Image (cartoon, rainbow, N blue to C red):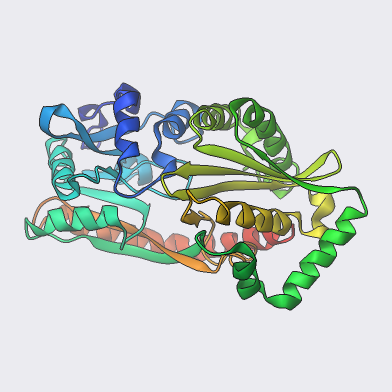
Length: 379
């Protein structure tokens, strides 16, 4: 088996959930997708994402001070290299959980644990290169004469939720576009009263997640086979995760209705002062009324009115044509390679292999993303 062997690290399921959650509560940089109730649900049944390992670091009195779900480079890309790769949590964010109380020391311990497991590098997928977590790892590396390498850099839409929503929407869309959206909403109201609902309790979330799954599987995602409801493991994961997180006020579902008929729904995670918009499902029979846009505006107003939320990450594709014009903030996202030894040829091999892979795959992926974004714009 390609090394480092994942058997050298514990399974995610063996990490005490109470300790994991306690670390998440005092984390340096939030990541809703690495909350235990989310990632454990992913790990239990999500297609292609289960059975990850846990890179954990413990400080004085064996306190958990850093954690990163990981897989081997072989499992991630079929590369026989001793590189640990952040596990895919189904949301495009792989920020490690690092204790805010002593972040650089925690980062050092995480690097040491990776070395003891046989790792020669750590590859972080979808992180904020200038964020606090990468900053702590960079500072820890600097004490050893090492530095990270950013291999990919993009920007995706985010929301400054500290602003007044109406002012923010006017600045983002302009009066003409807002007038067009209001006209669409008025036409939609001819079909029945238009309402916005929010599910926050476990019971309400349990009911609304079924609405979300139905809507997401009603359109083009079903044709492509990517809707969550089309895979029993994916459906089980989202049902388990949303209800468990709702019990801790860390998940809410939003929906737009015409009369009693839901026409758009979305899943939002909450971690510390951040929100993360996971996915959107719409009824394409109402596409001409832009239900996805209508829901995005209602979500914007909801998050801006919430004093606990400072930033919302769309976790959408860069340049997404629906959310990008509405949420005009931009969050830098990239892939970061963390070397564990000086002048290590494994680092160079990893960079070369991933660069070659990127050159082959990127043109095709850009086309797929463009076509997907065009379809998502239709609602």
